Amino acid sequence: MESSNDAAFSLANDYDGMTGREFVGLMNTETERLNLKNTAFVNTTGLDPEDWEPTDRINISTVSDLAELTKTLLPESLVWQILSTPEYNYFGPELVNTNQLLTDDTIDWQNRIIGGKTGYTDMAGGCFLLVLESPDKGTLVNIILGTENTDARFQEMKTLVNWLNQAHQW
Image (cartoon, rainbow, N blue to C red; front, top):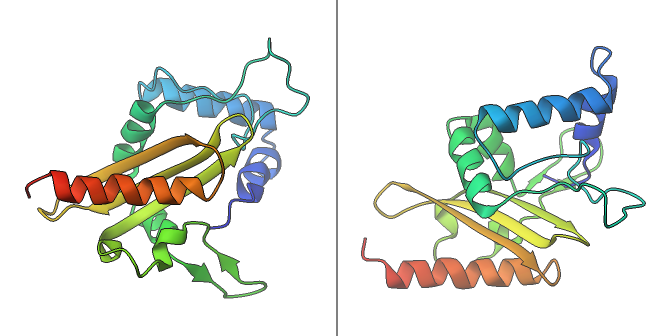
């Protein structure tokens, strides 16, 4: 839902004696297990490291690795249930999903959204992963990386998916 990274930070620092360093190690071990050769983490949140220097390592991934990770996560219905919920208010303040396309009624493929994840850092720019059910009941994984701002990622995703719907014969 909201991209505050509180859950990742809490899991990494408060779960059964876990430390942030150990959690990052587990994250990188999992990328190796999944054969994500171009993905590596330096912190638990995926955010740009504080006080970064050009010689420092950074969190990194590729479209190919993100698509592969998404295929691994597709059977996990709870993940997609959360990532397709526009807002949630059970106890406490209302949580609003940062995926603007969930509530954009100007797109004709909105009812095919399985879920999506947004992201932004100064180094990576605006990023957006959107999973759709294709008209032939397959799955389409759409990824935009490196937009100039957070709004551009949504417009670029609309352009990509609209082009895909026009260019492909289902």
